[in-house]
Length: 175
Image (cartoon, rainbow, N blue to C red):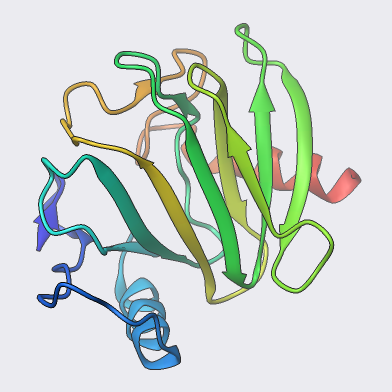
């Protein structure tokens, strides 16, 4: 299990088989782990190692989970997200931190996913309980350069993060 500096799990172990069927049981196990996580989210990598050239993962999240706005710039990585269940607000930001775009992405709706080019500041927040995303982006994963965090947004767990997240929900609710 992968952990961050605060010693709570960020990710579950990848399934051991060469072929993984994405089942409702697999999704439900991710949802259960996200409910137990202090971060209110958990990743289930489907790729077997951080060195894999293509990263595929399930990201189960609950409302109130904060992902600091970031981009994938060094090295440049595109990212695709499809909502399997639940719904999210996707925020796209200008370089200065002002919001450029807000999209509601929801399973079973007309907008079920988003694909972003490298270098675009973005974040998303769950607006329904037990939201599960399927994410894809190039590997390999290196924690030191995977995300270029926005300097204008609070870090996860830092003073002001909850207020910033509340602001994002407020802005999303206006759309």
